[in-house]
Length: 82
Image (tube, rainbow, N blue to C red; front, side, top):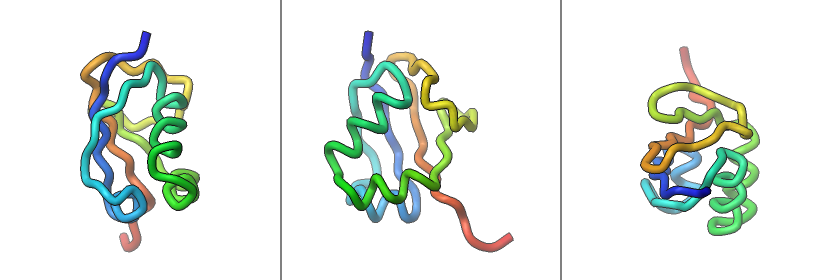
């Protein structure tokens, strides 16, 4: 069952989405990615191919990961520098 999660966008992902934060109903990370791409379009989809995700502070690229209701998902594009 899908619960509502908070999505926070950073850097290029924020620019592509056009928002800093939003809420979305999703049961898995894959479902969440599908919904935000559906909402924000191809530009965000391209950025997401290089993004990693933090789910409640834990980094993951596992799109089958189940999301707990109320989870916070940070969308993090690669950062330049080092």
